[in-house]
Structures are given as structure tokens and as C-alpha cells.
Length: 252
Image 1 (cartoon, rainbow, N blue to C red):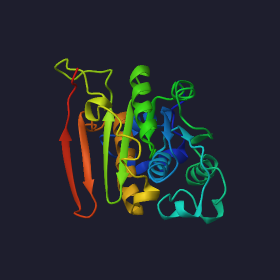
Image 2: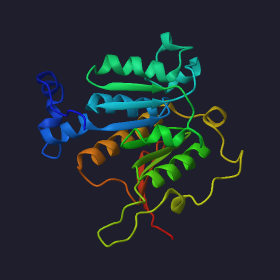
Image 3: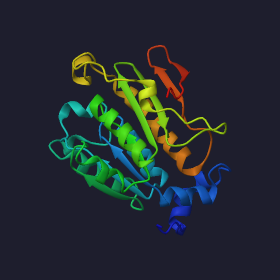
Image 4: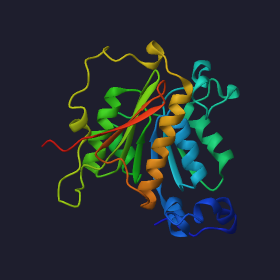
């Protein structure tokens, strides 16, 4: 168990959390003791990692096998011009270290696949999917279910995005198992059907909206505040400035 005692400097840093009845000192200690793995240090990962580091999550793992390029900087705000050419995981670790020296950041310069997923995920209490790869999205959902690790997953495209929370190994207060990712999206779409961000484009601020929502869900899961988006898909339309919530259930 990680030492979750807060130093005087941490008490001052997190004062606006500590005065919240829903968080308080115990909640802040839970954040400090938490171990969260963020897969992807790009458009979604940038706000997720920034806000989780600022919130005082004690251990943040960053998984990314890519390098920072000029075209990333329109939305991947964790990186700057001087980071072009650096490994994203390393660039993210440097930026987060400057943001909050109380947080330990572990860069994993690798790709999550069937061979690496289990070893990576078992070192953490929670996983955030910040990828833009559909195959990885399904893999993370399947592995997290098997390992009984909460997963906060999201997707963005052009001007809209979505986010949900997965804990299919648990049940609600009526004994009904929570839904799986495949209850929401049974099968991956055929290759080439869904264009990538490079092909279709994406408005930079959109990734900030959706990534920040993911960070909020992580904080809620860790501290027990509020109601996580379990069995609910939150949809955001940036052009219409509207949110909708779609409920989904376990199918089998």
C-alpha cells in the first residue's frame, strides 16, 4: 500500500479539493494512493494526464510508442514545439513532472497488444483509453474485464465525441451485471470504414472536452464521488454544443 499521507505542501496544493465535502482529505489520500495507466499520450491523453497529475494521482503510467510531430501540436497540448521528435511517453513524463513533482510518472514506450497488455495493466488500479485505434479499444476492454480493472474509454471524430465507464465484472444494486464494451459495440467495424483523425480531421478543442470528461470519471471512481458513467454513454456534439446520454445494458 502506497503511503497516502499528505505533506504540508500537498495540503496547500490540493486545498480546493480538500474543502469539497465529496473529496476531502480522505479522497485526496485515495488519489495519492491510486495507480492509473493512460494508454495514449495524444489528443485525449494530454488533458487526461494533465488533470490527473494536477489532481494528485500518485502514480501515472503513460503508454505510447509514437514520437511527437508538428501536426500533433494542434490538439496534443501536453507537448510543445521543443518536444518534436521526442518519444511521446517521455515528453509527457517531462511535462507532468514540471506540473506536479509529487506525482510519479512511468513512461512505457511501447504499443499495447495481446503480448504486452496483461503485464502492463496488472501494475495499475485503473485504465484510461486515450487511443484512436479501434483494435486497441476492444483489446483494452476485453483485458480489463478479465483482470477486473475499471476502464474509462472514449472516442472522438471531427466535432463530436463520447465517453463511458466499464466495470462489467461488477453488478448493480439489483444484482444485474454491468454491461461490457461489446454490449455497446458488439463488433469492430470493417477495416477502412471509420476514417482516422489524419484522414477526417478533428477540431483540437474537442479532445480537450472529452479528455477532461475522462479525467473527471477517473477522479469520481477513485474517490467515490458522484455516479460514474457505468451503463451510460455520454455523447457530445461540439457544433451544436449539446450533450446526450444513452443508456445501455448487459445483453448476455
